[in-house]
Each structure stands twice: as structure tokens, then as C-alpha cells.
Image (spheres, rainbow, N blue to C red):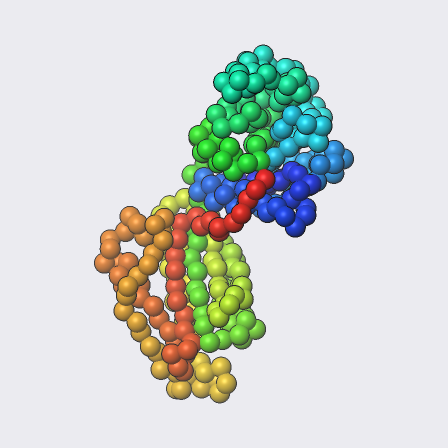
Length: 326
């Protein structure tokens, strides 16, 4: 299991008042397990649209995670569509009905009959307990039309339900199926240069990395006040990872030691800054000798202190804050 797709379900996510941040959480968790999130989709509460997107996801990725659409109302279609597309008939699970009923009774309420929809389970699915809500999750390991095994996970939309469910009951089975490869990343943050100038100088270098074994993927992003050069590689051994991920920035630095206006290398005066070093908690240097970490200082290689290159390395991905209200 190496690739994943996340499908966020809910018409509210297509408007301007709700933001899907569940996919950010899932991206981090999947990457830590060695599974790369390839595609994210947002689909409204339309049966045909969701069925189309699900079929496409099953064709191209190993793991499909659907979030939302597990409630008791008519527009909660995720269970029904998964059952239809995967040709797995559903039946009511009496144990789920009793759990939902007991949850209502603890609040002095009677369970509405519509909540029985949440107890419908596709054949062969593993039910994921939800102590924080009425909608159980589902974990399906299924042979998909001769294309190999597919994992399909149905999670409730609210983050307070989704996150503990994924960490508690999904991460273990996925880790067992993911193998030993992980994704490792390092980044260069370049100031004082425009995106096109950085691309012109760095592209001849990073284009060679794609032919390495394992290949190193490269992304250039323009952000406020800096250009970001992100490198990533899938590998199994920490030593091989360090060899591959430590070299590229050293290859870039000589390229960037040229004045962008005059192309005169003699005009460049390096400016070295010693510590402090704010490495992420999950940096892949956490198990390394700290003296090796300290040797990685910030190097700015440009004509003045307004320009420079900073390097940061990390294992897996980091999350981005958001306001998920799904």
C-alpha cells in the first residue's frame, strides 16, 4: 500500500463557510505511515458525483479515505454509494443500533428511527467504534475488480470524531500493509531572489535528481518574502536517506553563489549565521549525533544580508492550522 486518495463528502464544503482541514490531518498521518496522499477531492451530496469520484479513486490508488456523509439524514450518502460501487450489500448491525440507542438514553432521549441508517454495514466491513458520536466508521479491505486489494475507510466528518478514530483503529492496520518505505523531506528557503531566477539556476541541478535511485522529487514554491525548494524521497534505510537528502542542498549552493545582476561570482560574500537551530520535533535528525545537527548552520550566499539560503529537514509532513467544521 503506497498511495492514497482522500474524498471529503458534503455540499457545505463546496461553499464559502466550511473548510476541509481533515485532509491536512490525514495527509500527515498517512505520510508518517509511508503512504503518499496523491489526490484530494471535495464532492457534494450527489449520489452520481460521489460514485464517479469513488470509482476513479479505486482505479488509481491503494487506499481511499472518505470523510463525512455518515449521518442519519437522507443526504448522508457515503455508506450507500460505497456499497453500490463496491457491490457489497448492506445489512443492519444490531450491536450498532443498541450503542446508538444507549447513547440517546443516557441523555434522557429516545433514539429516532432514522438513526438506524447509521447501523447499515457493507458486507465484510470492519466497524470502527465512535465514542464521540453516533456515526461508526468502516474499514473495508476488498479485492477490486482484478486490480489488486483496495483499502476503503469511511470516517465521520467532525474532526473530534475523525482524528481519534483514525489514530486509534486505522493507523495500525495501515502500517502493517504499508511496508517499510517512508517519505523523507528536506527544504531550502531562499530569500533575495525571484522565483524565475531560482528556477533558472537550480533546474539544471534538480532535474538530475529525478534520475537517481531512489529518485528525488522537487517542488518550487513562491511564498511571502522567500522562495521554497522542497525535496522528497521514498526510502527504507535511514543511511540511504541521509546520503540522498544531504547532498542536494550542497549542490545548489555553488549554483547560487553568483550575483544575479552581474553573474559575477567574485561579488558574492557568504554570510554564515551560527545557531540557534530550530529543527522540527519530528526531524529525521532526532536520532543523530547532536554535533552533526549543529554542523548544519544557516548559510546565506548572496551579495547582501537581505538574500540567503536556509535549510530545514524533516521526516514526513507537518500540519497546517485550519478551521475544519465538517
